[in-house]
Length: 181
Image 1 (tube, helix red, strand yellow):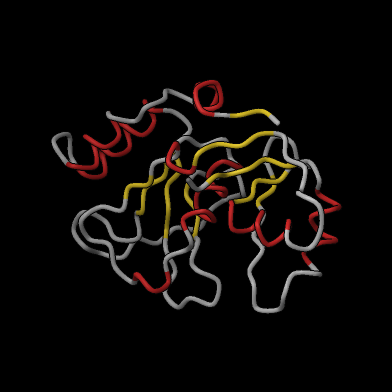
Image 2: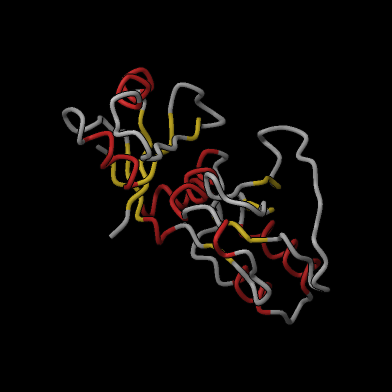
């Protein structure tokens, strides 16, 4: 089972990053609430653990606890970011779910310029990938339901996905799924 981790070992992570074999991607996203903490995925942790003792983590979540909605028009698959990168990016902003919104419900390419790192809409693609992808993170189930209903329609697959989210907010996500170190 893939896991996502929160670590406060920022300096150690930076030191180890330089020791990881060239060509391997180490991705870490700073927590928006605690800038000294970083969110990393299981693949990144494995790379960092291979060059030292196991990296200290504060908590771990099953990757499956953070749902992704890709929708029926998904395209440019070769440039999609790794799911662990996407999910740790969402966790860094204390999100509970994320939707791919690169194309609108009419199949038109969406454009958006995020105002800040805290903006719920962001761009992310695979390292070295071609086409960019636009994502919308959700911090609450209610926010997801409202957005998906407006963007895709009340009876859409997207609205149904949002209504079925397992947790109401970030605190419930941590309470239900997080394992403390």
